Image (cartoon, rainbow, N blue to C red; front, side, top):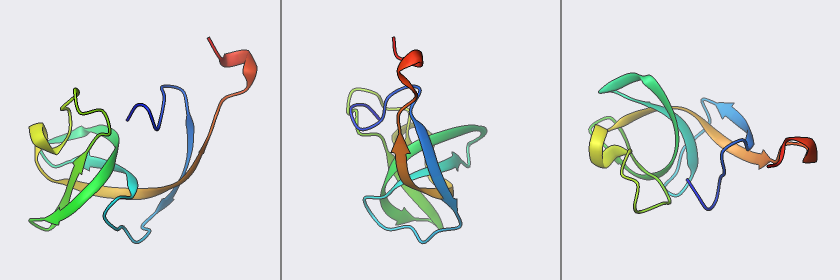
Length: 86
């Protein structure tokens, strides 16, 4: 999800929140149930959600795994303390 989110960012997520196109969500792909992802909602499709990452060069999203089930919507993010920055 770079450049919007970076590795190590902490997120506040609301489970069961209403999801709209453009929202950033935490979800699981139906074809990869063990994989928890943070992606942007593109559209509703086949009773699930089509998700894509903001980095167009990385395609580990619905283009590879199909539709996903949303667990929650990201409300906001906050960065780790300065002692954790590298």
